[in-house]
Length: 241
Length: 268
Ligand SMILES: Nc1ncnc2c1ncn2[C@@H]1O[C@H](COP(=O)(O)OP(=O)(O)OP(=O)(O)O)[C@@H](O)[C@H]1O
Ligand SMILES: [Mg+2]
Image (tube, rainbow over all chains, first blue to last red; front, side, top):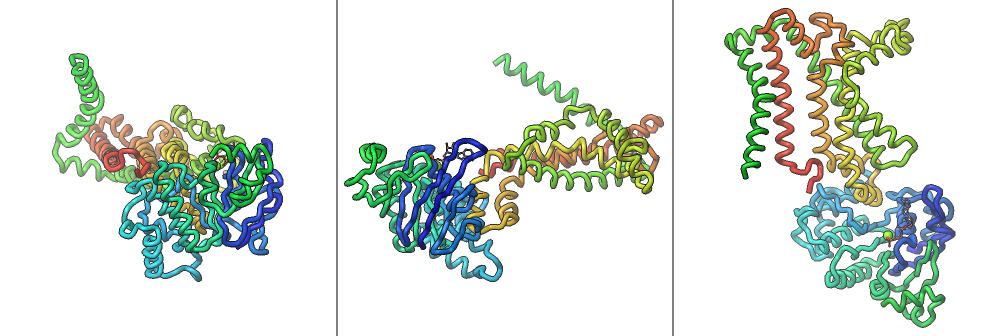
């Protein structure tokens, strides 16, 4: 799936614009990292893409289809929140199956099919046998993986990750980074990862978009960015590594 | 150490004298002449009708309260709108206003000579001195309970979970039913219990609007006072035990929740 973000603007209750005519194209099947300092509007942009936030102007086009007015649910984008946002009163299996359970009757898989899909996903995240546990009984890394599985369960057209590793310690972070990349490759889903960690962005992504005060400063492969930083701002990011 | 023991002794003594003793005396007096007499007293037609009226009132008031409390708490926790803070203050107002004053206010507005009551009069609709009036003032005095319990739980938790549910394809209603409500169930139950206790026990506000028609618009607290003023102490104490028992049930439920859910509402 190719996503075109076209001249999107967003401000919060009359304050200065957080996003201003922001444009960005995410290519089919790629892993794109959105890198920028705190407050640069990364989460806001991701929320606009997910459909949780309405932009004041601009368009979103997914494979030629205008999805600007589509509700978050109808977009079928998998989202992993920074806080993971697991349903704490549901066990792991029910968390993962949630997106299947709330589908329209016509599309909804049967109970047996759902259970099968959950098992499949548990295997994929290396957590077979954890289905009965509750989120509170999991480590941070395990929670993150469950959040991943829950997002992948609906076979998302796009995967959106908002700082999925920021709550983890360095070692776990490294491991999970590899496993997330690995999962993404296997599923082949177009992915946007938001982060303010330069090493993470460059370590995981096919392309990195550098964001500054609501607009994209430069976009390119890690090598391109290193070779030709377009501005001192981008350069400062490279040096921070 | 000395200070600690003194404080504990004081607290226990206070609780005994001010709380336990009076309640115990009610039961002692009510059963002083035996169970049969007690049973006869609470089976008096007037007392029975008062019990029924009280229970019916609670059965109407508490569900309305739950629905309103949920809506209000959700609106306040999730949306920014002009007057949000004002709404919060207004909802808490019944705690600050003396019930008897509240009753008088209702009488002035909804009574036959009030703006609303007067307008409804030609259509033969009467809101005061009947069940409607009792329900209205009970709604007023119990209004804050559910909101106050649910709002803090809702504010600190669950917004991301709700958003996650939406991205996973849940409709607004599915999100509410499957994600929001389970997270606040215990706060909701707790608020409902407090509201029930208050609805059952309210005296002041109800006494103003009830009209005190014997056997018809007397709630249990009003009936107890009536019996007592009639020098029917046995009847008064018997009726009081029923009220105390209803209250005890809510108290036990409340204790159970506190026991099983140390942090009310926050499941983990
Ligand atoms: N709901 C909101 N109401 C008002 N202002 C907001 C809201 N959400 C974000 N903002 C503002 O928009 C700006 C960008 O926020 P955003 O969360 O998109 O930044 P970010 O790049 O994700 O930062 P971080 O790396 O700290 O997560 C910030 O100045 C923030 O204060
Ligand atoms: Mg952010």
